[in-house]
Amino acid sequence: SSSGVTVAEHTTIDDSVILAEALIGRHCCIRKTILETGCVIPDNTSIGVDLALDAQRFHVTENEVVLVTPEMLSQELPYVR
Image (cartoon, rainbow, N blue to C red):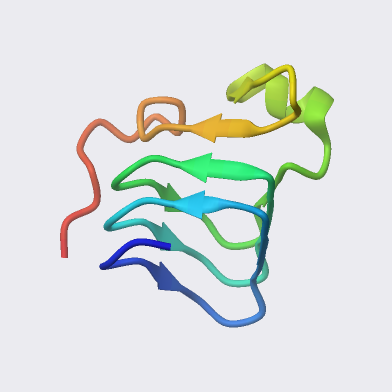
């Protein structure tokens, strides 16, 4: 992960790239995901677990990697500390 990343308790992150200033809530599961700078992931969120569901709100590559941007999360401005 990059600098300025905050990961709350009881969250697992596997095979993922988390860019700067991301905030990941409690009880999340993040797999094979690229989180762009400034993403705020709410508590109890799973990404990379159900690719059909992920494809409805994020971009899923041919290699089943999920790309998440702040815009996809309806977050207009990146999270700033």
